[in-house]
Image (cartoon, rainbow, N blue to C red):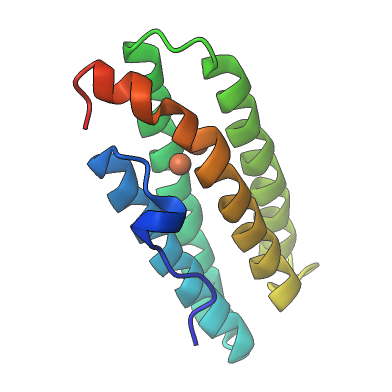
Length: 135
Ligand SMILES: [Fe+2]
Ligand SMILES: [Fe+2]
């Protein structure tokens, strides 16, 4: 069973590029969860690299659009992104060094973060982006 499922109702931002990026993140997180549950460390490492890569690209893409529209909350929004990236880069370093594993707690933490951030912090940009012609 999937760890996290995207729906317009729960996660839609009214900006199609970011909705698509969120869906790709969810798919990568579900893959990471499956390989971790299955105990395949090599696959889990690949899935972790993939997830972190697309999360980084997504954060940059959102921040670029927020900067483009002169969004007031850009710094606060970016601070949330940077905070998660710092946590993830620690985790990645520990995993690579064999000092930590990806567990249900890890993927659960990422799910929680997304489930909180997207409907609140991300959704706050729906209206200003739409007004600026980004749909
Ligand atoms: Fe986002
Ligand atoms: Fe965001």
